[in-house]
Length: 300
Figure 1 (cartoon, rainbow, N blue to C red):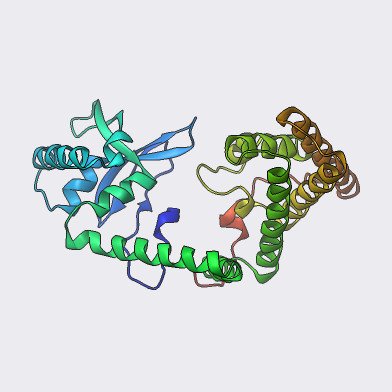
Figure 2: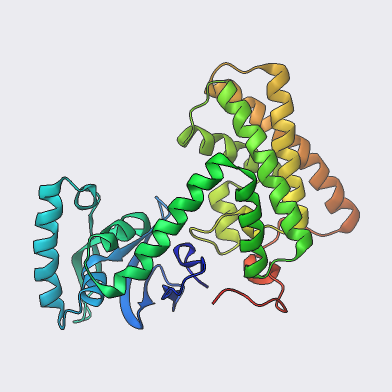
């Protein structure tokens, strides 16, 4: 399994490769160990800054890396760089086998830190970030490019064409729903997450978090780990919510939650009927490992 930040965008990248599924685990970076911690509440990975600094700056020891980070942190703070502000001090397993406090950053901010380190080893990541940024600007001017790139990414990861078509359709339906929420004055972010949770609980009888745990997921996108039938029912729930919202015109979050529940219940009825006819549960523990076509060459 490869972390999302390491897709191959036409340049050679050294991957953060997951070596274990434990919450407090180690990843390989440039064939060296980087300690990390999974925050269950925020659903974020936090990486040891010292470990990354030691690798990218070619420091020989942890102490040298700590000294380097101390100087770098002072410079970043002086420059007003928010990376230092976003630093979290967490207990992570140390070399002596004890849990010790160390500075950590989440994925977004560890990438920002990498940009601040003058090192040949950091250059591939800087090139990748520049390329991704350029592609996002292109997609703003021509949104169709986003769908094309999404299709290519899913195809390279090994998903079937049938699944990809369903997934892209689900993106379109999701966009229609968020446009409707925006029309109703719902703020993007936490409110979107709350309403999405209401829809999911209604049709799948699991919250998004419970659904992800059931599939053995952490940071991964839930829809990327749904079967075709799960995707179809999720689309039905979101499309129904959109249509009901257009008729009911909810005015606040509480009213939008009721609409989300009604939209989800439409899909729940369909799910119950299919399960009655097949004798099997549609809510599946299958994730991307089961959904990807093993015959298709995946990203390395």
